[in-house]
Amino acid sequence: MTKFAVRFAIVFLLLIPLQAIVFNHLVIFNVAVPLVFLYLIVILPMSLGPNTTMALSFLSGFALDILCDTPGVNSLCCTVLAFSRRRLFHLYVSMDDDLGGRSPSSRTMGHSAFMKFLLTMVFIYCLMLFTIEAFQIFNIRLLLLRIFASTPYTFVLLYAIDSLFGRAAEA
Image (cartoon, rainbow, N blue to C red; front, side, top):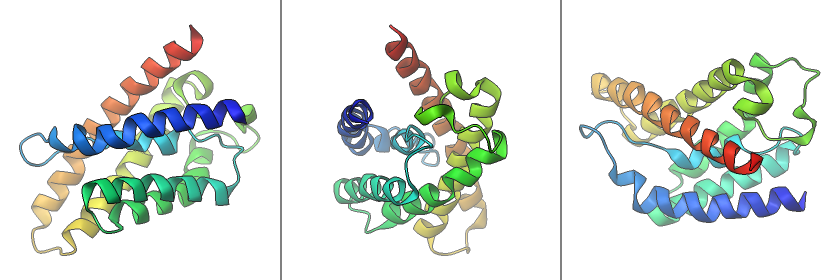
């Protein structure tokens, strides 16, 4: 557990400030925003209890809310995503497989299952975030464009991060 705590703390201290300072400004066509801090929620072990998972996710969203001046939007979306995380995981992996306390990744789940799991999580987060952020459905075209542009942008970056961290963990 201490190895996980150290890894989570390092990734937290890297990704939250990077999201606020760098990635929030890497917007493509004023529409697509990469949300790489979601990797924090993805790497939480499946054996972690639901309360701990939701608390860590809430803290991640809260830290980002403080740095980005978004009052509670990321906290809410992270908490809801953490709540539904186990169910999403078991859509693509059998109920018996709990990964033995390991984090979901392409190495532990297989590329296909991990890609589906990651894409589903990113899509749900983008759907919640941009719907709450807009808080209106008057410009449905822009809302859908932001959701369907940010989802693949974030997915590609998160998959790349998973590949980099996976290689670093193996070495």
